[in-house]
Image (cartoon, rainbow, N blue to C red; front, side):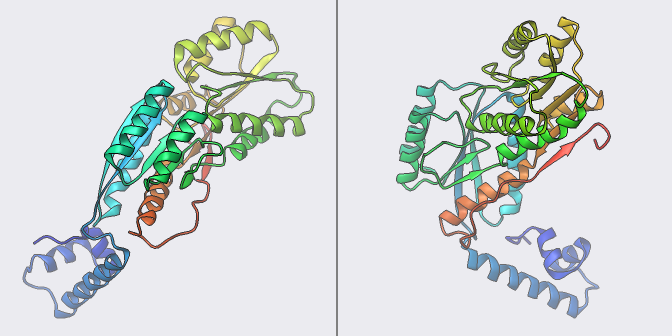
Length: 337
């Protein structure tokens, strides 16, 4: 016999084990009447809750549009798909549109196609530009909610921003790095995948402001447009190391950290402190090898959960909730890994 709720959810609601729920639902012998009554009461309560939410039996599709290196897109996809089972009994499907680099015209064309075809919501990580912001506004005004993800579209109409407080994340990185560099004259290099992403620029701005407050006079350099990919990032870092012999620390906002380290090795220079973002497989390996000093990691599953809840609430399939709060982020070191 099938039920519209996961067995784990029924077990939790009833306060019974999975094995007991299985015996009751399949009408196996040896089950007390009181146990059956508890399960029946749990099912009624779940039906009431889901019926009130408007989720039961609904089919919705969300479009996830992301410009990012493949390593990040892969982590996002895993996180979003892991949250899907928790949305039952709603039947939610995701359409992923993932690439390492969109041409602006192609991205705007995709958003226009989504608007014409229809969607229950768009989760968008894209460079901030007037054209992309306008395309997002047209989606929003046509009744398709848009959640900007990790990086925002400045001034554009959207339903919500989902992600960490980027400026605070950058300030946190500076707050940790400044005492580590105390007593040295090491200059710091900030590497961004692209200045087109407002979220990355906010991290860099937060870092520079906090470092200036904590270590006045320490030089901070910024480089961008390596797109978070190894070849372009390596060339940009090599040029910065040649131009600024004092660089001895890195705050990597945009990734490609193996390429950054390779550039230091090629120049015969040590990197005293190396801070990165996101605990993907590459950064996990670098932390384990003690090549990274620390990583600021945020909870992508919380991002997915907040995005889904926001979009469902827009369609009155969930009670209207407060505006999403910035996602949690944690600092991971080789010792805590």
